[in-house]
Amino acid sequence: MTSKTVCITGASKGIGAAIARRMAKEGHRLILNTGSDESGLNNLSRELTDTYGISIFPSVGDIGNPDYVSSFIKEGCGKLGDVDILINNAGIAHVGLLSDMSVEQWQRVMNTNLNAAFYTSHAVLPGMVHRKSGKIINITSMWGEVGASCEVAYSAAKGGLITFTKALAKELAPSNIQVNALSCGVIDTRMNDCFSAEEKADLALEIPMERFGTPKEVAEAVYNLLTMPDYLTGQILRIDGGFI
Image (tube, rainbow, N blue to C red; front, side, top):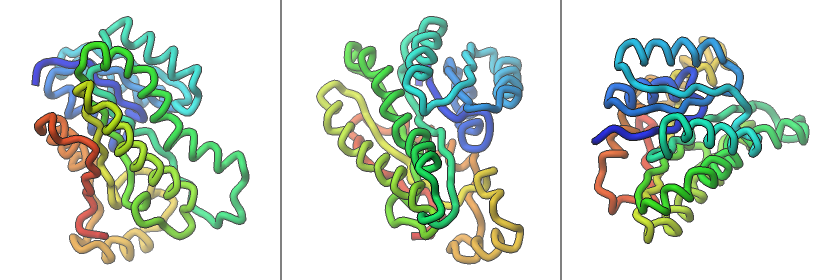
């Protein structure tokens, strides 16, 4: 794959950072976002620049804010060129009863996990359509497919992202733009820090592979998906260790 400009949201740690490392290894230019972890993103940017000599544009801001997304994408493209590959990875969880959830909490989950994919796609698509080339990968969850008790907002947002992927793929297929998604199972990231060690151990036993997945495995799946033939679009690839 020739050098591309890749935009990754939620890139300072976990899955996003692993994807950034995998893309950097291929020599791609990176437009990276984090919601608040400025030091983490700056450290990652220095690491990848020193190791691979690539160009990186890091940015801190709320990916659920359309005004920020518009300026973030515009500034990043101005420095590194139009986005060839968009990876919508940013996500937040909320564990608790729906009846205890506030409207503000619901809206924050929806803005970050679902609305942000509209904002970023809306920003990069004019260039992709003009060039008749581009790829979008959305990082979603198995809970978006089957739902999770006490994670209603998260499940709903990720479910919306799945149908967003399928619908947008059909819309953009005539422009030779592929839109696919990875539906992740339990991945070993900070998102699971809400669980105790005992709870994590019990959860791992429910997974046929008897372990959590790793961010590196998800990043490798992203890379493989990007190298698939263009005829593959509108697909949801599940990476969950056989959980569902």
